[in-house]
Amino acid sequence: MRSRPILRALFALAAFALVLTPAAARADPPIYLPFVTRSAASPATVGPTLGGCPLFPADNIWNRRIDALPAHPQSATFTNTIGADIGLHPDFGSGTWDGGPIGIPYNLVPSSQPNVPITFLYADESDPSPYPIPPGAQREWGSDHHILIIQQSACLLYEVYAAETSDGGASWMAGSGARWNLLSHALRPDTWTSADAAGLPMLPGLVRYDEVAAGEIKHAIRFTLRGTNGTHVWPARHRTPSATHNDANLPPMGQRFRLKASFSVTSFSRETQVILTALKQYGVMMADNGADWYIGGAPDARWNNDTLVSEFLRVRGGDFEAVDVSSLMIDPNSGQAR
Image (cartoon, one colour):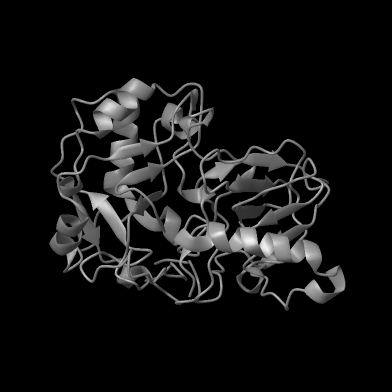
């Protein structure tokens, strides 16, 4: 297992070494490809969509409601350890902060988009290069430098972590990369990371303004915590064991939480009500190490930053409860849910 907080230093050293190493000596090992054909995908109906593609089938765990499931027996321990008085924070918004967009942007490209080579630091846990990264690709401004891409028609999702280029995008270096068939329930091999530490896809868990404008979010939302208990649970595939990030009383990677049913949303703005309702029905999924109770989303000029921040702060960690989703699992190697 690798601890992502030290990736930057390792990546810099690896990048220097790769420059000095002949290409023939840098062949990546065989990589698992979690692909199925369109005819093998199930079910016929779909959940959320983007760019003409489903963000996984309707019966995928990301798209399953959890408001009727039992609370996790360690719920109170988890929330108290994380911080019951810490306010929720929207990790997305409009405009810029520190020179870049607020949130994690995504790119829609046609199936004809040319592929470009990527050299991965964690090649043994990455789906192999090349990826269809377009010129001028939108990239997360923060230190993680994620690039998310949906290849339309093919309905393939590509996600890259710590993406860097020195030649204008003709080639890239990155920490890790993952690719999913959005018509499939396939998970990554157990113990593999992705562009997110938990080995999960990122884009299906982002709050997008178009969903809020339509009045409903129908999927779980990605969120971060400073640490975990050093384990992971379905559907997560990877953990980040670290003496500085682990606490036995914190939840595992992949843990689902929901806003308590008793929490009233009536005094919030319409946009925030849509998000909070989704937090009650679909909840959040622990996806990466970061600031506590930070909710992932995509940047959009239509977000009202002042409203988002002020209203989210009124929602505290103690307003959430951990949920036991084990009864939804059909196969530990599949995201399909009962």
